[in-house]
Length: 388
Length: 112
Image 1: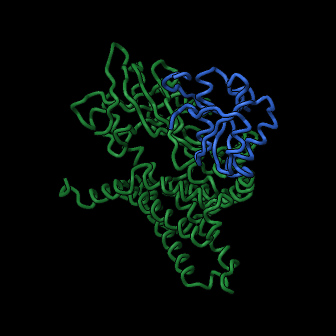
Image 2: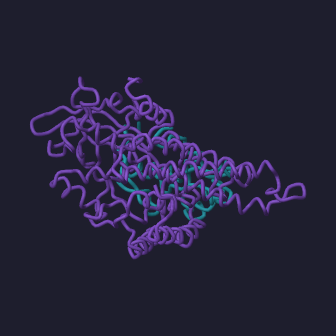
């Protein structure tokens, strides 16, 4: 793996870095400290800018009209795009667009017409419905939502929990058990329309995040035509698993970006702040915190880039993605925590972004598979068949 | 936490004396206890709920009743209360500004 940036990478990263510093950070001075949305006029203005930069729709494959950005560069951009207050869960407030649900790129032509293309045009929004009250880390066993065939339809009953954006979505990918005896091979992914009878968003789940919330869903005799099966009957687990593995790399990159920004702020602050007649930067306790931060950032960055590199090369990257997620979410939490300590009272006030990062970073050790599951995945890869 | 705001209404004058500077959400109601406004006190609010409610009753002087919740999840709770109101009554409260909202279909009814 070449650790040097290419000229093109350097250029693109520089553009995004300036965008964050010149466009996003000034706006955040006027937004609620927990905001995850921009005023509509500002959002549209910034989308025009990212389009002019040729970087709108970063995750859309080039054959569907997206910019041709490789995965390592995309990871480095994710690190840059998260370097602001809302950056962990709303990098650049979505002004670089998104691919929606990447699983739809594997959909049938008819499904693409109905769901993928309108999503890419910004006309429809989707959600990913996997986790249930019975669990999310072990979907093969935890999924209790059932789908039963009835003529040309499937009828879904059950519920989902921790689902982002379902209240604003036009459709969603819902995983349901279609064969109770087949474990992971008895799960199917359905594309469901949110205006169909029997689809309910029952409540918002309030968490440490104030703005970007999850929802609880209930399905009561929700009818879905058989044409809306994505990826084949009883093939849902592979779709879910692929998504969980791929998602770990950008998830890790966001944590690293926030950690870099927090460390940058600490490095600016400690030479200025004096205690007992000397700047904080002269205190060994502070210096060690900064050193530990730097090591945490670099270690998690290299691990994450290695995962991205392997994925880009088409190599197996399950272990590396789990390592990236584990390393970056835990390192990010430590870095933000140390920076809060260096800032003292200001570190916990809403005047500065640390308290938001602290709350949101805590969620990162649980979301997209908790640290323990990542360790389990890594151990399984290391020990191979001897563990089974 | 109940999906619907389940605190009892209190007369504005009594409510104002209780309010402090915490973050949270609140509703104002008219004579018939119909909700006319939903607001929140967030990280930018000067004097928290006390400041936001004081400003709101200046803007909507026909408000007669108040209820509030202290919460650090003020943004998600604010949107939830508006979505529930829209689900129950088909529209937003009289003086609530246009906010980008999702759709909720909460179980039960306003009276339950």
